Length: 370
Image (cartoon, rainbow, N blue to C red):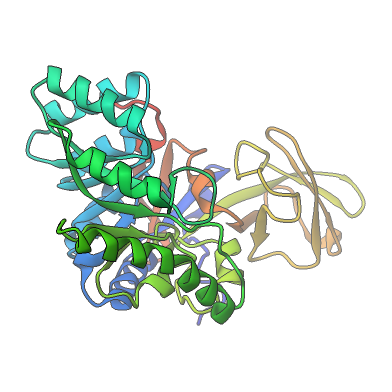
């Protein structure tokens, strides 16, 4: 592979910091995702990573028809792109319930569903949807070990399942099972934990069938569990990071062979002291939720250490200080791409080694129109 695949022939025209999307690599990642499950209908790609209408359209063109979202804005973006099956992977509360109804009314031909994990919210949804003469499409959010949201797998979960089934304006479609806490670097160890955690879900499914209820649809996992759940023929997988990939998962999930398709372009803006350079990549340019040594990995810079960041500056210690010039371009892979994309209003799209167009990161907004 060409070691400078990332370098732009027209980099002098591109302002910094900039988010770069490498279109050919995105396309290959999409095809690799499909190859892992054989049938694109088994994918509910999570759009929280890319938040971009054009990438959703690329996924649709490849035969992927189902999508998962984190926000109503992301769901609206998918609907705008032409997606017809949309799962909002949150339990909606407060004004968001009315926003969901508004979204449903704006796109009456789309299947749009959200999560519920308690009777109280089920009753509230039933009441509000009844007033609007609509049926709320529901998945039960199941907690099988992450302890972030969802209902634990116990007898009360079965009671909730039956309760929702009895509501006049709720239609229960299945279970949403997210095991994002299982991220062991060793694939066999990770797979064993994921499989063990899923046993209680399988037992619950059998219990549902034993009382004569129809078998629920199962949406399971994210990117770390993708290669484990891909082997369960009846499970729908919802990876997201795979579309763009990042340094964190690239190092951690060695069994997944995706390509880095999103980089940050930055420039050296100062050489304030021997061995020290400053770049225009601060907290506002790359996700800063991780420690300083897990934020950005530069492809065309060696022997460096990111010392600090402020809002618009990043300070690095480098060994080849004399060879570096103010204005030099650096290309970096974010450690965590999802919140990094969310920092940018637009992405510069790279084809054949040059930026050819700009895509809006539309769903970074909390609200588009609804």
